[in-house]
Amino acid sequence: MKFTALVLLFALYLASAQSIKDYPDETSVLMFDCNGSEAQKWIVDDTTENIRLQVDNKCLDIANQNKDNGALVWLYTCHPNFDPQNQQWTFSQGQIKTKLDGKCLDLLYQNPSNGANVGVWDCNGGKNQQWTITNGEIISGMNGKCLTVLNVPNNYTINLLDKDRMFYGIGALSGGGGTSRLLFDYPEPQRSQILDVLFKPNSGASLHILKVEIGGDAQSTEATEA
Image (tube, rainbow, N blue to C red):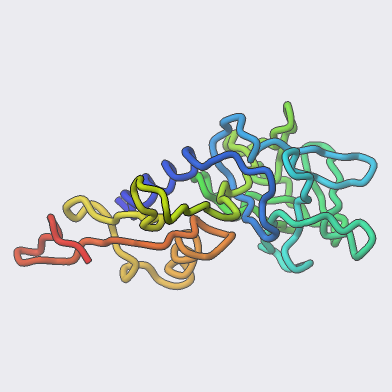
């Protein structure tokens, strides 16, 4: 099982995240099971040709106006008066095409998992480039998951005078008696991608702490941690 505990805790973190009214620019847009949350509700505006998140009116944006296959999309403040093409999209025959260069919105590498990256790729008619729009949700024709803004708050309020529990950071645990594989086992670029999902500010889970078990004798990692 690969990074089982981390994936589980990351999913629990997403599910429990608070309602957010203003997502930071460059917030990641990924694929997750549809759940009806504000992070999955979009406005497809035929007049401006923007796809905007309903809750804060920010745009689905091709990061850095990158024209390469595999260029990622993220959430960004709409800029209709300054090179808007990387925020303009057309929807036709189930495909969502960018006006930047005509590429299609693509569930990258046909990854069926929660947390899969979304970007643009040359249109090829694949199911990972097919989308339906229902009740504000943009749903993949490949696996029925929803286009989702990563639900990470802008900030946390910490009251140092509060007598309740202290804020110790957001963390995750990798362990469980040898049931997870550690970062060392992963080749690049997968190793860096895992680190980004866990720690990259405004992009991944923005974790502060990662606790992992370390090996003891008898090739065991049980009940040992670092």
